[in-house]
Length: 93
Image 1: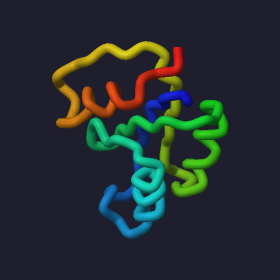
Image 2: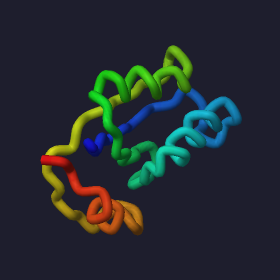
Image 3: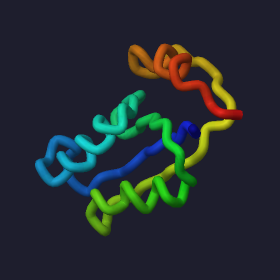
Image 4: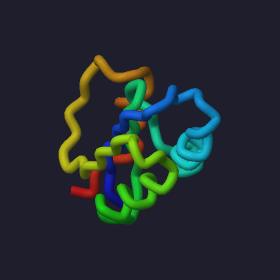
């Protein structure tokens, strides 16, 4: 499996009902929210496939960035539980 960082800029507040399906999908996939609009997710897909999948949950004027995480550096500035999530979901390479 591959860890991806998924970050977004939403046109509306994240708490808007419009984004409930996006947040629900991230939670369904056991993604970890490490900053306000930044998540880590461990999947068997390419970055483009991940991008295209999550783009379907967003408005056309929202922005989405997906990148593959290939090496883990632990930092204390992330939300609580991030280092534990990374230890439980190490990058494949």
